[in-house]
Length: 589
Figure 1: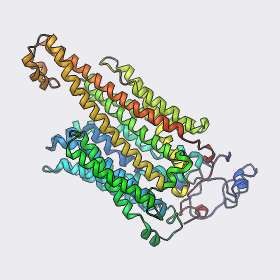
Figure 2: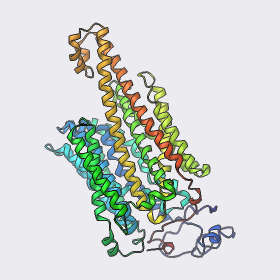
Figure 3: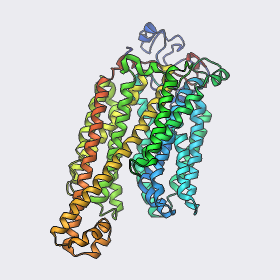
Figure 4: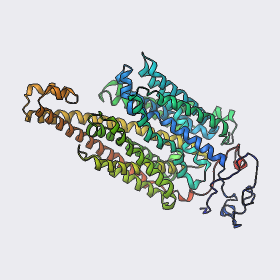
């Protein structure tokens, strides 16, 4: 492995060839600033890596586009139920984030591999423009009095479809930096996401309370368009990274695989969403899951036996080193993302039920929502500054995932009075998540050859968001079922013991979660019912935490199966901008 540190900045950003400050011609790259031969020159015949000022500008723009594409998710997670109720369809909320997830999952599968063949430029630029349009559609839904709730769903589909293209910055940005910085590049790509998860719930809540929630999306549209324009002006990666002509590649694209894989993902994820709405035996659930998985099986067979020149999911990537190069870290990535959603369901529930008087004290609820985002930022920052010093990347991934699983599972023993303990456990769990998530992405990228980086990014993105959709549905279904059964048993026993006639129990159960409880029954009955309802919530939260722990254990096993990628974390830069002065170092243009 090369040990010389790459040059962090370079004052020259023009497209003409120039000599660096140390006076050594970078094309030949025989020496570093102290006159000592660069190790890269002996090992690879390559000059010391240089990251130009123009490259840093592009990295910032890529990160902005990525983060803005995610912003609608925490906004609608915070206020979606109120917004759709105001627009006349309270049930539409269940599809807002789900529609985004389905669209982004399909888009990753389709377009990640194509960026290896047709170049990244127009996919990233197009993604920012599509997402810009999606923001406008969602924001303008406020003024659609007849179908506004459904318009938000349509807008989220558009944002999700374009968002996958924007989020390909997760590999388009790190490839512009030395491989030794791969984990840093992944964190950098998500830089605006950290702002998003901290600030978006706050702006959403204040926007809704003051009647101008649509500006969460108008402002996004403005900044997303600026990101689109910035990439159009400055982002020029190689247009033919595979070395093949565009016309040839277009003829060889796996169109049937795109149809089969896309159809399977859409139908399966729709079935999973419906599983949280209907009974598991309902035709909505059974039919969609059966048909969807049939498509996925056919898709897998086509990819394996179709003799394709450019399959979307090449078997060699999954089987490399018996799955330890890519498959294990991809599974770990999916499970890590699943675990995040458990905390994202449980913590807001605790805030609303136990700490803010049913959401009445919403400003305090906003404050309590901050530790989760701040913890993720801390974990990502720790990976950035200490990951390269610790090395042993697979054990870093295992250790950070263990912290995430351990303290996330410890959210289970919640009570209405142990708020401080829960905040501490949440913070530690999410800090582990922030470290593990971005490291898992980096390890999946380093598990393939660079020519397959788009394929790896597409597959891992599909894994990540599909697993998130599955996890969300499982956690929500388990929580609702456990809460319903536990409420019926615990509240019934409590109010009977408090003296409520048995013929009034059924009526009380219909109002136990509403303000009518306090006005309809004596104080001792209200107290008994409220305490029992809190116990029911605690029980449901505990069960979900244990379910998430089971998934977490699977993820830990996958982490332990990963290979160390330290030998690949060298100072090689895989891609240079074609409009910059180091473009001649690209193998293909």
